[in-house]
Length: 279
Image 1 (spheres, one colour):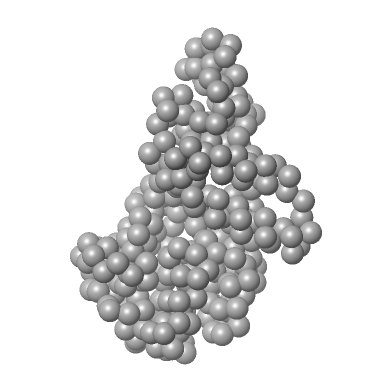
Image 2 (tube, rainbow, N blue to C red; image 1 turned 180 degrees about the horizontal axis):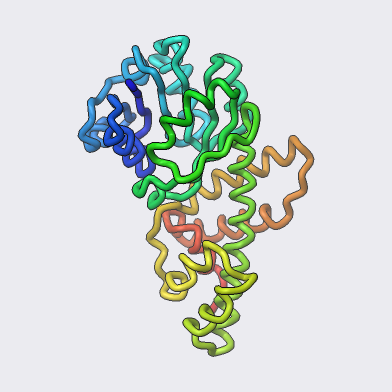
C-alpha cells in the first residue's frame, strides 16, 4: 500500500520503518525535517504532500494541537486525502478530538498505543482502537506491521478512553511499587530476594518485572517520560470531569509526578516516581 506517516519521533520512526520492511511504499513527514530524513524513507515537505494519493495516513505526533495542525490545519493531510483512504492516529490525545476527526472523515481510527519505545522498535505494540468496523477493516492490516495486539474497543474516541484506563492503572502500580521498594530498603532486605519472593505471586506486574531492579539502581533513562505521563493523566482527569468518574489515586499520583518534574525528572522514565520518596 501507499502510506503516509506523519510524526517520526521515538515512536513514529520505528513504526514507519516496520511498514517499509513489510513492503509498503512509505512517505514520511516530520515538523523537524532532519528526523524525517533520518528514517531513510521518502520525505514530504507538508502533511498534505505526504497524504496525496495515499491509501492510508498514519499519525504519531505530540498532542491535540499538533494533531489538529497536521490534519485540519494549513497544508493538513485531510484536505489532500482520497475519500477512500483510512486515517490512523497513534497519538495519545483527548477523546474529544478523536470524535471531531471522525466526524470530518468516515474512515478514521483513534489508535493510541502501549508498549513504549521498546515496543515500537520490536514491532510489539498493544493498540487500543476506536472507530467504525469499516475503518478498522482497512486499518488492521497496516497496524499488524508493528503490533502484537490490536483490540477494537468501540466507536470513535473509545481508543483514547481505553488508553486513559491504561494510564490510570500504571499510575497506581508505579506508586505502589515505589513505596514497596523504599519499604524493602528501609527494612534492610535483600532486594533481589524480595523480588524473587513477590514477583511470582499476586503482586507481580509488568512494572515490577521490568522496573524493580532499575529503580533500585536509580536508573531512569527509558522510553516513556514523566512529561508525557503528566500530559496523559491531564487528559484522563479532564475526561473524568466530563463522565463523572472519581479518580483520587490518579489525581494524587499526577501531583507526585509534578514534584518529580520540579526535581528535574521530567524527561526521566515514569518509574522515577520513586525519587520523591526518601530512602
